[in-house]
Length: 111
Image (tube, rainbow, N blue to C red):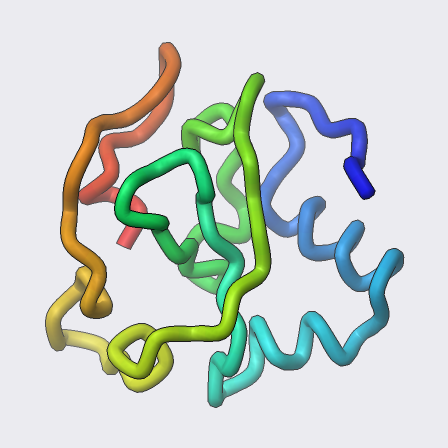
């Protein structure tokens, strides 16, 4: 299922769409303190998990997900799930690639 989103929609808008389409259980697994699942940018290599708490208010344009972003929900890697403030900010995922699109934040800003 593909939602129709605009560049000024936020990551929170995507989460609201997910909750409305698939139920609050999905959101609880993404947002919960255990972070069992993560929302990922599938157009980046390696796949970039997005911190939905930190970036919920940011636009899809800023996050480099518009106009051709591809998001997916994946089981969280142990390093991502167990990440604590002040620890390795990559969450076990290497920092590769660059921002896509005009006005998009650099990849290092998304952690």
